[in-house]
Length: 162
Image (tube, rainbow, N blue to C red; front, top):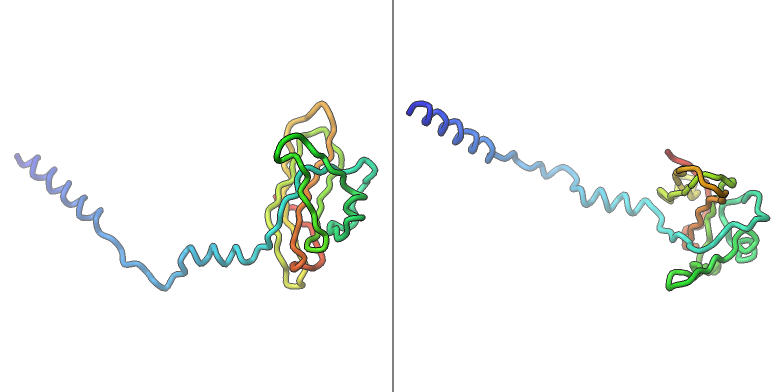
């Protein structure tokens, strides 16, 4: 009988201890506000699809491409079948392109965008990550092409992150 009472007392004690809650500190910034602030610091962009780097291109001197003529000297359209087969339309009167082009490789390599931000000098800093995969039986030219609204004008700097 005593064992039962002790077990019940312990169970009730644990129940009441578990139900206690601490006072909420209203002075801390809510998580929603922190997320909003971080989103405002990034610049929106669109990833351009269905293009390829022309074989005549050795390197791109300036990652910021502002004219259709310059764009066409570096990239060709890679149209495929289906609804998503058309290359992303680029209107250089309203937007510019940022291009990252890596050397040819026989490894499966992707370039992942991380963030596009404006620094204290009003330059655009495009952060990206390179992911190198398995060896392939052919070579490819990894590249990433993003489109940015012209309202975000500025020099473009590329920053590779890990």
